[in-house]
Image (cartoon, rainbow, N blue to C red; front, side, top):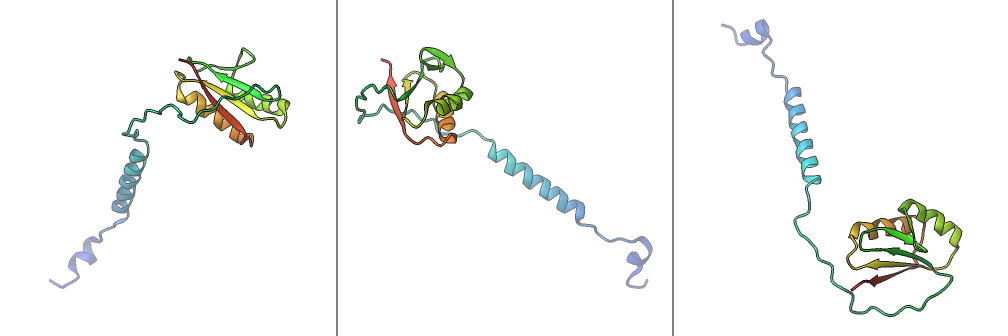
Length: 130
């Protein structure tokens, strides 16, 4: 038999394209699976030791998050999306965010994200409750 017998008659070339595709799909799967895993460490936030009393200011926009996680403005329940309209109508005065200690942290983060999206950096954060 001559040396190139198999290559000439049967075309026995090894195509690595499907193998590379499978490797990339596995790599993509493991990258995405590790990205969506939950954090392992649970964090309990401590109370602030340096809290100071804040005097009432009529020009300050006051938002309140109660223990149930509801957002209030002048004793009226509002949504996080309505904060943008309040900021526009309020002007340039500071914003005070009163958060109950028993409130879920997601509500606080949602309001702070909305305030930062509106370009507000002058936010006073107070803790209320027991």
